[in-house]
Amino acid sequence: MEKLEQRIRREGLILSDKVLKVDSFLNHQVDTRLALEIGQEFARIFAGRGITKVLTIEASGIQFAMAAGIALDVPFIYAKKKKAVTLTENLFTSEVVSFTRGETYQVSISQSYLTPQDRVLIVDDFLATGAALVGLVDIVKQSGAELRGVGCVIEKSFQEGRGLLEALGVEVHSLARIASMRPGEVTYVREAEA
Ligand code: G4P
Ligand code: NA
Ligand code: NA
Image 1 (tube, helix red, strand yellow):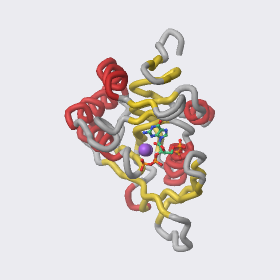
Image 2: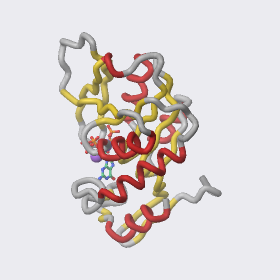
Image 3: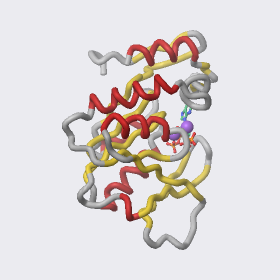
Image 4: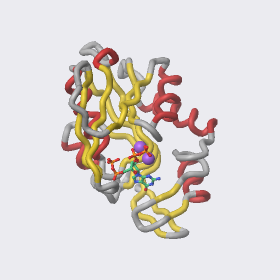
């Protein structure tokens, strides 16, 4: 998505060769028009797949899942994060080991909102290590619903997330794929090389 790539170049703050801060338009302050356009782009990419639910994880995937849900005219669900608990009745739960945060947490959704009749699109803001997304894939599997794909706003292609998801047989589409970055320079993966 050309517009997104340009915006990342213009406003993204590269904090290290691995961490990109996009708080001025995606992750803290949100450019609402851009968020809606991102949703439309996901809807275009995943059109014709019969998507019935969009699934994301709190917090920063929510605005994009909502935008995709609006564009596809379906509800979105956001999985909740919490420390491990014992009472897990009526929840689909998966354990996530976050390398960046050095902690383990559970993601869960109510069993009421995903059924074997559902066809699911998972959406998130960043695809990095993929740990949280693998947890969502696991939840979809537990529910018996069919996973039709994963859409990410920004993919750091030099990290392992895409490979991890593809190894699970998941189709991944990211709107901006960063091959490498350093202050003042962001290089994108081009489809021909992808
Ligand atoms: P994860 O796979 O469990 O998400 O772990 P990872 O270590 O990849 O990322 C940890 C958190 O940091 C995630 O947010 C992820 O979206 C975010 N993240 C990863 N790389 C970047 C980056 O380069 N820039 C920014 N801005 N965020 C990044 P989260 O734990 O889901 O928290 P939330 O912010 O959604 O609440
Ligand atoms: Na996120
Ligand atoms: Na985040």
